[in-house]
Length: 387
Picture 1 (tube, rainbow, N blue to C red):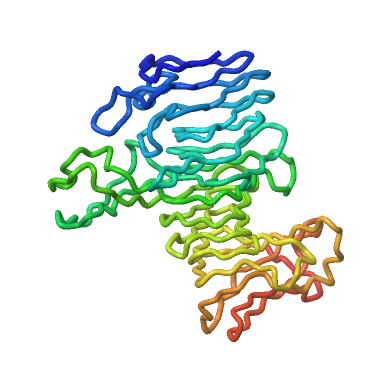
Picture 2 (cartoon, rainbow, N blue to C red):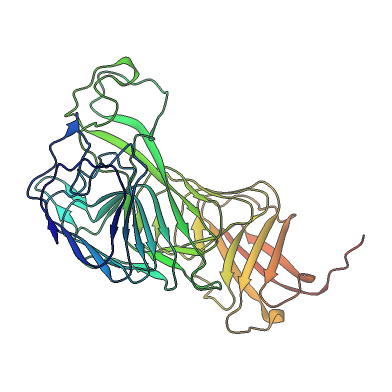
């Protein structure tokens, strides 16, 4: 089945139960509020709590033109791809409020490119989630394979002064939640994203009309968005692409492995009970009380996470994965590198959780101020806990 009419406005849920539904609209949607599209091939796109579900054995194909509106059109609807279902992205502007991959197949090749602007592979307004029985691996598979973050009507407008003479509005920001379930059932990678994630594309200013903060703006002027991510869920998310988004990175739960890069302007905060690891480069890191780092025993000594600065707000746990059953007494490993080369690092509240070993075993931390390397090794003996 193919839908070609772009101006559908129905507000109910959609269930694709079997076969293939193609979104082959012949033109861009016409019903809009300024530059906000209010319709699509599958109905209203914003302001309604509605879900488009792709069931087992069914396929949704975004085949032509602009099925859900421009990539920076506010979106709130959710697309859920259940186990056995499939979502295939065509070479067009794919804009989702929420995309929930629940075990279904997710395929794509090339993203979209106009003469003067790269539309990329897709835009995520609010949330991207991974669950089901098989880990996901979203890597570059063609041209223009970019994910844009933000933006919805919930995007925040900072209160700093905005001059009418500014050609760009630079104080719009939002945070996209990336929820990862523990798909593997262990410490394995549950979802990997090698696709570059960037701030929302710079296009016309579509949400606040022509007078944000009391100033008048030509809606055709470009504006800059600042977008970030918040990693939730108990699973492990790996980022191995070049991520240029400029707002914050928060690890609220589970584990975030960075084997690529995160822009230096995006400070990383790790919340209590969550872990940060990898071999890539991130911005300034802040560990709240009870947060920690994660690494694998016998990892290469140069394969460490690099950051310009490290701030600790309490106890820090270094979780050591041990898939090869390495003898803990031989553990002597570099953990991370602080490239800003502080004079010292306070290890008073640091501890090691070595997989398969009782917590009472003693480990010692060291910091080399000439290289910025933080390391740990087994110190011998067992702690005596007094009550």
